[in-house]
Length: 126
Image (cartoon, rainbow, N blue to C red; front, side, top):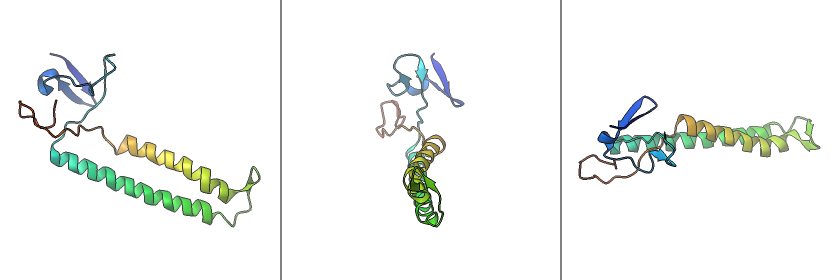
């Protein structure tokens, strides 16, 4: 029986029936975490991801307003450009990349979106 461990979750070939192409990366013996969830768990996970993406957008817009308009009275220049112009463009890009990295590591999960039930009766599993 082949078993592998990902983040304290143990999957085995007997539990899943077979390893899918999503479970094994490039045949090198490395496995990534694929979450097998019920339909209700998938719905809540997708809802959570959408909610946090919306919150991230609002935070990014607030930062953009502060970085662009809030710093307009500051008389500091970076490479000959006013500070508000630099923070309102490059600062927002950098901040957006940091927020996306936080989202993908803390909120998003790699879940199996297949909804067909197979012959074993396990919903969404290969």
